[in-house]
Length: 294
Length: 294
Image 1 (cartoon, rainbow over the protein chains, first blue to last red):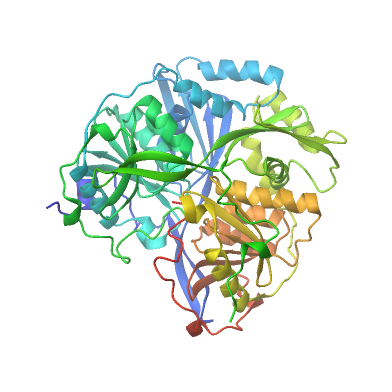
Image 2 (spheres, each protein chain N blue to C red):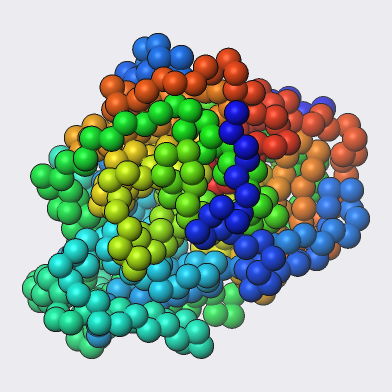
């Protein structure tokens, strides 16, 4: 029997008490009565790579440096070889500047690109796919007992989601233990913050499992693969292309995970069925997540 | 008593039978047995404005022309004054080219921008906010009986969501009648396809209500306002900035709408309480949406 994890077991856990992350807003409920509810904050953050403005992301605003680093890494704009000289966050300007020792490949590419078509937006996706070329993830077994333990721990951990809703969560896990639980208004931001933390702390990826409240789309699968993590689990569903990419890079992909149920659409031969599903309670409506990403 | 809408009442309804939109994928379920499930397709679509490559969107792939038109309009890259000369879709190249009679303002801006910083990604958000300057939506009343009727009609309409999950829906409505129901793997695509359809068909916006399965973030609120629609409803939650923008442009904003319950955080003085919430059944777990956007 696995006990629910406590926030103190996490290296980083959500902080629902952080007053910068939520706000009380007054309104009216369905009966016409005044209602005051907590809603999550959402702020722009403009990310620069050296002197190059890259993107303005909408974020809840915690961990801006991890977000910037992880975004650039997951988009393939920073490679493992690029040495980071500094990461500067300016709260007033709402900017993060990531500086590398030498100009990155991406800036070179961008220069060529802008000479021809004047815009780099379209290259972002192409560059992400390029980063997958020839990538094969390390073979890693996943025990179903870990999946059930992780699901239970994550669902019972105090979070902004449970307090205010309308937010996505992504959790970096090792075996049955959740380690880093990030939340954000954009589900990709939550993943990027984990990627940024892993880069900063030099965390190995081959023995990790990533859990997301979001759907298993191509972009989510590509990001997980770019991070070198060999397993991705979600309570939500799949897209066909997400499944295809997972199979091609050897990513174990588990979705529709609720209560005792789940479906594995890639890497089922790497799953070890060491838990009896009948011993797992079905999700109680109240305690289960209501649908984080809606 | 309002009857559930039939797909035939819609001008455009989801087509769960369209074989291009879903695929059967084989996997293994939690008991270790083979499982074959339907998952939605996801394809890249690269959008051009005249000779300018703008973005590659990940989409389910129906209505690419509406998606391109609506995306450009909602980003403020096409103004109401820009005359469209043609919209060309190339299924093989997965591109849509939107051609205007004369070069657009956006292309002018982009040229200036690229001369200085070489990249236009960061301008997209700024341009969207700029489009809101001085915008005030027409004052429109919303009856709570319409909200309940719409919710019921939308939840009981056959959809890709009900068939395969992992997809977002957005519905253009008039009073208690849903008119156009678009679904897409990206929730913003679903809204953009509706915007593109409205542009193409010259549909007035002032008497419409937009319903989304997604969260009421700043971007969703800005898009609805850019489309000129004065009311936005969702079964999902709010962000603080979404609420702020809605209040500043006069958009009626209703969220957390499930069964008899909802919360209105902007424009409650424009709501008319003509339905008794106690006559509305709470959502049955099976019939309610499970969380489209997760």
